[in-house]
Image (spheres, rainbow, N blue to C red):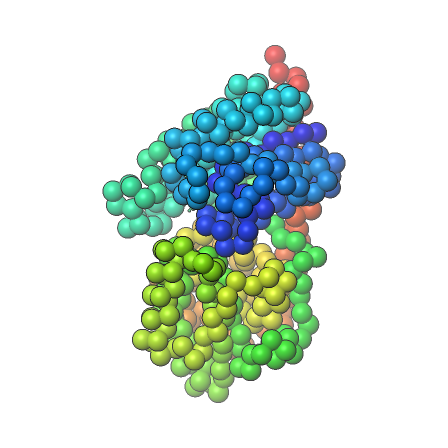
Amino acid sequence: MRIAFFSPHSDPLAAPGQPDSGGQCTYEREVALHLARLGYEVRVFTRLWGLGAPREPIAESATVYRYPMGPAGFLRKEDMGPYLPQFTAAVIADQLEWLGTADVFHGHYWDGGVCAAAAGLSLGKPMVFTAHSLGALKRDRLPDSDPDGAVFRYAVRIAAERRILGAADAAIALGQVERDALVQRYACDPAKIAVIPGGVDLSAFRRCDDKARLQRRLGFATDFVLLTVGRLDPRKGFLELMEAIPRVLRELADAGKSATFLMPLGSEPAAPEEAAYRVRLVERAKALGIEPAIHWFPRLSDEDLRQYYSAADLFLCPSPYEPFGLVLVEAFASGTPVVATPHGGPSEIVSSGEDGYLADPRRPAEFASAILRALLVSAADRRRMQQAAFAKAKRLYAWESVAARIAERYSRLASEAGHAP
Ligand code: F6P
């Protein structure tokens, strides 16, 4: 079976730290790879810019094809709208023969959805849409982020998402919250929707039985190590996290304990917004007097970052809004419980008290309490949470089973299309 992924802004093989790259890239790369292992042939169509080559393999029968679109250089995903017809036309012109033999077109995010819908209509192919994040939910959670609509272009995006969902033969929601939003906010036919979460590579993210030893080996000498990761983007909530740290350190000190917070420093060279956010973070840490407890880490290799995940006692996700939260399942696979935002996907990933806690990062006292609740427990309870986190990753989030569920959806669609009147 042949599957075409349309994904202009999100390149599955994007270099770590590349702007507008993130969990969606990992998702597409891993799903393509695991579909290929199941015998599928996958081609991913994305934008050519920067150092990308026109063609690059993910696996033997999964390949990324890149096509120029709009001006040279980086283009924000929010600014891609006017160029999407040009992108779709370039893909169709170059891939006409292969697309003619493909079974399903799969659009990722609204930019990919626009292309997959147009190409699917032109070539008579069934179309699947995965939104990854929905404009209506993002606007609800970040009401002050774009008062005049010039930055995130919500009006265009939400209208496009509505039309894509109307045209799609199937939609994949990453969780129940997203599914409900598709039905209630976008009037999507519930019969079209399958809820299939994101996943984790269980062979790459590994649990470590002796976290204390690994922490020492990595050079951390405090009682606890807490990790947060992500692009230096205000939407990741690192500034909000800073406000919770003084109370955590104070109450840990009262209990005779100490902690190190591992915080990302972003990529080099940094984009101007990233560099500005970094300055704000470092200055705020100084003003709060928490700098000595922070270990800023530069962009790490995948393997080094995974060591941090395994070594950490607790993983923190302080985003005011997180559409799914791939980083949480990566933490779980590393045997690391989490304290995460309740807004978005994490509310469905975390079982409070079992493998982590949910707390609002915009309420520092609440976020700090959740961190303390997770840390100040007996060694046996801590171990129980670590085991529960790991067991959940294995049970629910292996890419193998995520890809198999997506494949099942494709097969159903393809056979329905085959029997179409
Ligand atoms: O583009 C980077 C990225 O994190 C994608 O991985 C993800 O799908 C998207 O942003 C989320 O977009 P939004 O900012 O619209 O929630």
